[in-house]
Length: 178
Image (tube, one colour):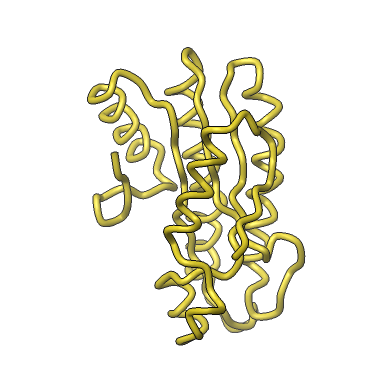
C-alpha cells in the first residue's frame, strides 16, 4: 500500500503514518514490510540556509525515520516483519554544501543500529539501504542532468531493497551499487 506526499502522507507526522499502517493492516491482515524512502536534500552553505530548509531536512530525513520505524514496529511487534530506512553515501562523511543532509543520513544509520537491537526480541528486522548515486528527481534537482550510465536506476534499488527485506539481515547498512 503506497504512502507518499502525493497520497497525503507526511513521514514526520505519526498520525499520518499510523493511518497508512492501520489501513494496510486492515486490507491485508497484517503489515510485513515497511520502506521509508522519503528524503530531502537542500544544498548550499549552512550560513545561507534559512531554518525552514534545515528543519525540512531534519523533519523528513531523521524525524521521518523515527516516526516510520516506531509506527511500523507497533504494527509488527506481534507478528514480526522488516523495516527499511534509506541513507546515503553522505552518511560516512559530511560534505560542504550538504552538511545538514549528511548529518541526517548519519543519524539514520545510528537510529537503525540501535533499533535493530531493540526490535530483535520481537522478530522485527530493520536495515538501512545505502544506494550510490541514483537517478531520482531529487538528484536531478540538486545536481542537474547527469549521464545515465553514472547513476543507478530506481528499479535496481527497489530490487535490492526487497531482497534485503526478505533476508534475515538486521542492523545492517545494505550498499546498493551498479
